[in-house]
Image (cartoon, rainbow, N blue to C red; front, side, top):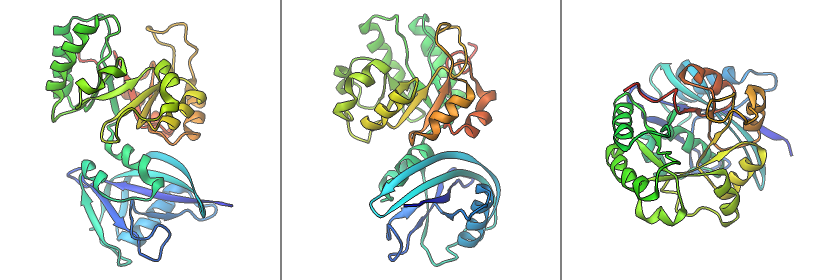
Length: 314
């Protein structure tokens, strides 16, 4: 069965809302909502196909777009490759040129709309930011609180509280305080034993590679309404993350780092190869910073994660 190559768009308006279209009843997966787009013709460049399809379907001209995620999905009757781009600037007023209903929705509202199964990683990618801040180790709780407060003021929207050298009780107390700081501003990801899950219902959980190997076969430890992430370092762990149904991963180390000098770096080419084999939104980690965002997107990543590169200079 030949895999159908589709160019699709997460189109963001000036208010960051996202444009959806509803599939006609007679179409494959009819009646469900989708991110606009259509088939890539033989020999056609993906971005050109996207621009053509959006002009035909919505009457808009794409002015700014970049890769977001690629998704391979096998339906019983069809195999698809969704080549998804984020469109952040366009000309014209979108309208259903083919009679299809349209809706502008917030990223959070995406969870309320029924999509084809292949679209779930796109929904996640559309909801996640491009930067993932991981807190440095070795800081006192007061320093961590000040740094997180400043990072939130600077627009960070995804924070992992990583403090491997803290006593459990101290970490848990700090998690309560930082959860309060993040409320309404950013998603907090915690680390630790899964027995703690019930104590922090508003937080997501970031699994270590060891936890991923231990728990993957059991599936998600909590419902899809909470974020679940995992640390991955190669194809085997990416496959375990998919088996477990995690929402996103970090893939590391991309380049040599001070914190893990003995770890063999993946390099950009290997990272891109691994991401092509995975449908999970991934942040590249290790020796990268904001200046590597464009390169990360071209490699197929959601964005970049970092410790020192994103930690405010308080």
